[in-house]
Image (cartoon, rainbow, N blue to C red; front, side, top):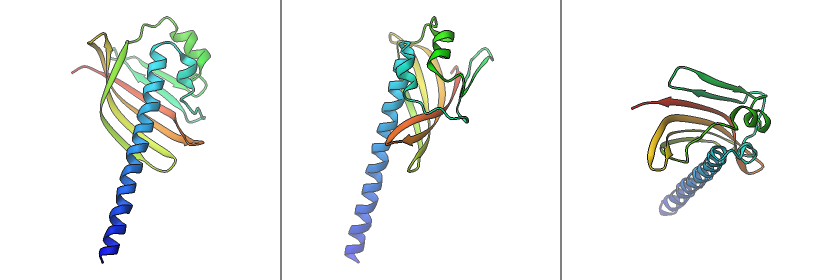
Length: 149
């Protein structure tokens, strides 16, 4: 009985460590994608994506407008043309993370404060559907909802 308990404890501990490692890897990819996007480095930003026919990028703004990008628009050329003059926040912080991770896919949600200096200039609730491609987490789809507290 003691041996079974030890084996089960070791197994559950390793599952927990695996989940934590995957969460950290996903957070790193998402931080790199957003940081490069805010700096207008769209090439680096889109290197974090795995665009397939089902991919979509949806951004809902406070004024009721919605930006809806299909798989054909989720690329460097389109983004550079449409957003190269857009002023983005300097940085961001994220909280309220929730993960649903499987062996090769993950659904992730979080809240984001966008910052200019230390001032919050935007708040969003975001979600990403991700897939693990050749050992790396990639974004397949995203939803961004702007809100005011």
